[in-house]
Length: 303
Image (spheres, one colour):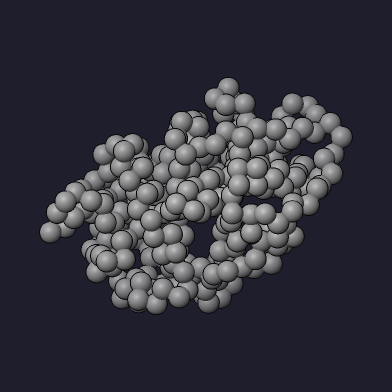
């Protein structure tokens, strides 16, 4: 018998991440979950739902992530039949959100292109693939870099300093930078502080570039996760540079530094997700040794 309940505690977050990592090949969201599950979407417990078996073991979960406009979810492969119920929960919750800070006009979900059965279930529920919708077509790629490949050395402009974030005392400066880079106020002080407090946060992988005037100019965060007994994987999320400094290629400098630090932690593989077109971000990842290994399709439903 499967029971369904809302999100309740920080312990739930750890269990949710553990389930995703247990079946890593099935899910896009796994290594960077300390970042995503720290978002303010979970300030409202009803924005997440957990499914447990008769023994109380977690077999599925879903979160409507307002900051990302995305339905994040994980399903134990033995319980894939729960997917229609999971989608129905997400749609019901989306229809309850108008008039709240979590309301959005549409929601997206990311799925690997080879997950045909899952794609069909979403299509049957009225979700539409965005890969070929004209001018606004959208899809992504999942990229991997072998951990021990040497990292290129890039010149650091005079007066700039590459270092780790200085903990809670620099969170406010980081939030200001993040908001400017992405053009949104989605990043909050509470969200960023929660990432620092997460048990899977690694302080030296939280890299910033300081400008000569003392402002933060760029950032890159790396995440580490033990995948079973013998694998240690890393992920890049997020990465950004203040517009006025982009001509210095500081995003590349910060990324390379995080990759070197991930190597120092003995990460065997490093992953990143980016849009599936030849933009600056994808070229950057390819230039530092990332290769596309899977296609990611984006499905949308309007509410």
